[in-house]
Length: 422
Image (tube, rainbow, N blue to C red; front, side, top):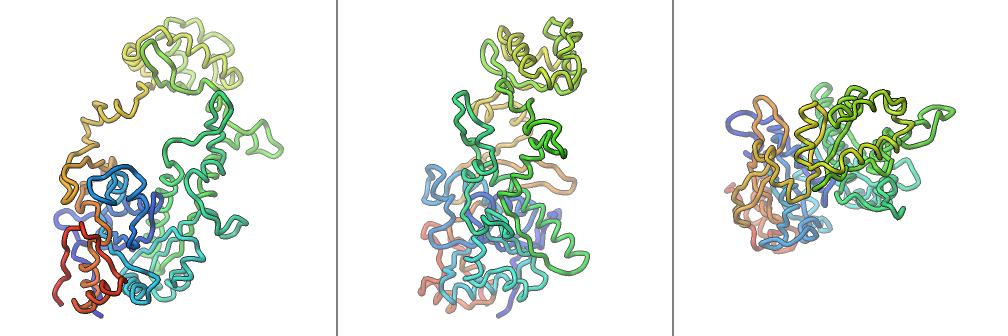
């Protein structure tokens, strides 16, 4: 079969940083799709491979205007195309292999054994495609006793001690209401892939990457809280007391909450001066950073007392005038109305072919010669199946046979993308 990359891999106008790279993405939920969203926003051609049922995040993230097009799915799957194949059928697997032959990057978040049963293990694919950057996202590293266990963000929030650090006044652990481990791991996967692609440019060789979510986040959390146990023998307990104190939180004001950070001695002294208590700068408990660590509970309690009688807006103006880092503590409702976010256009309203008017979340980074944009709206399940198969050299009759056998699929409400004539 004639193999070619889609014309969408090359951008018109200014060249996108990753234009010309093809990523075959077998991931679902959050960690993998968030990673490939980053790559797609930079210009990589990302082909999302889905089962007939589609990515689970299509269905568990709130109501949508048409089936399988939840808001969270659309925010993580813009600038991608979707092909739907039944990988349990030989013809579906062969179509995927033809696609992998054209790819620069292949990634999945299946368990390793499941990938190998489908013929998608790292050795199986890298032997076939020596220049391929192969990435497996797993819950737990292959060298440990937890290897092969299933893992979700909530499981790992508990397993990494994050949930216990979020304990409330009753001492019960609780989850951060945000899939923080999935999102963080997704960024780690993206930068590992970019490093592997850079290395390949130097020596022409592909790379195999394993990103274990448990160890990755445990390492981040321990870099914050290993603290005195960074030394042998330990110089103190585990945990940064500045972050673990019960009052290390937004501070109540007369009409809401304000967030303040004063890490340096100069900032603390300015805070006392701004609040009319310049005398406290001479208090031995608070005069230096090391002293404040030893008396952090007293410092936070005093700060709360000094702020409680003032309005939030008044405090923010006062503290910023003294160059003290602060912001009002937003709610979700007030965040989307934040005037700075409106200034920079983080939220844009655009039109989706089947969903009507939707809000896009713009990439926030800026790079000379690169203007991030939504080039492709988030796809329906298998929206581009016929078109991608045609690009791989499948004839219309062969494509029709795959659909008839159930080895390929396109959701009935997807916009038409007819195969290209061969």
